[in-house]
Length: 58
Picture 1: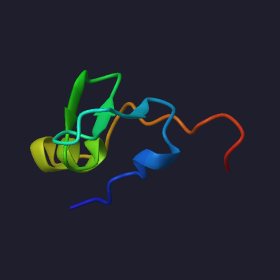
Picture 2: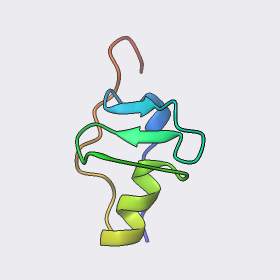
Picture 3: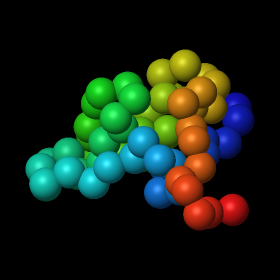
Picture 4: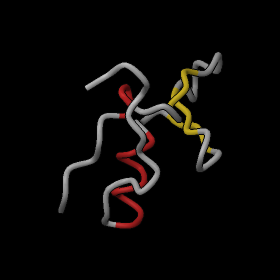
């Protein structure tokens, strides 16, 4: 199984105000307790295809 990208470095990652579901992905339109990229890799077996590095990061 491949490694999930770091959502904290993704332009589509958001922190929500919902304490039960604090992490969200704008591309896939879901929020949850786990990192969105981990959920994508768990569901599909492949790394997140929507990962885009935030502007200014390397």
